[in-house]
Image 1: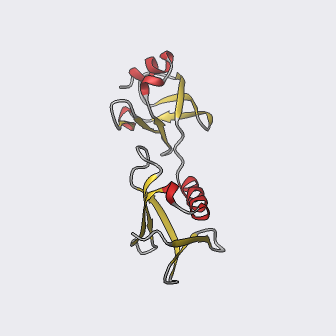
Image 2 (image 1 turned 90 degrees about the vertical axis):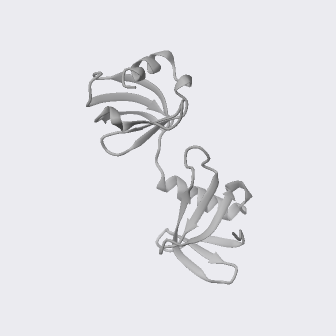
Image 3 (image 1 turned 30 degrees about the horizontal axis):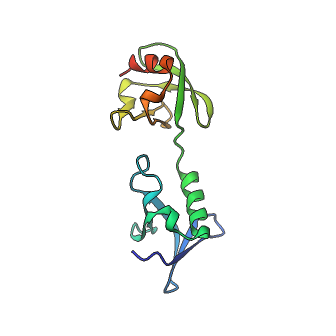
Length: 155
């Protein structure tokens, strides 16, 4: 699709898309095709009606202004802390309370059931807490020994 467009913020803080023909599409939403595996590639800009307005193969190819607005919008829409260390679990039966260190700081959450741990690949896990927040473990093998040992009890 055509990469000649302009993004801007409207008075309500939402993104507006202006095409080269001057048509304006308010309140567009960026959608990542592969948010974990390739977060900077393959991003669709979708209208309020659900129509794809543009496809961005690589975020780095955008003009600075568009890229900055898009990065900010994606960051505000997506909250997926990356788990760096599993410090403690209250029990090895669910529900259990987990104390973890993430790239966004330390936190405590409740794991309702073992099914809330999803394996995305051989080394990547996605863990959903009782509030629906997802924690990403990008590579289980890169966790420290204590974290891996605790995690193995649930896998």
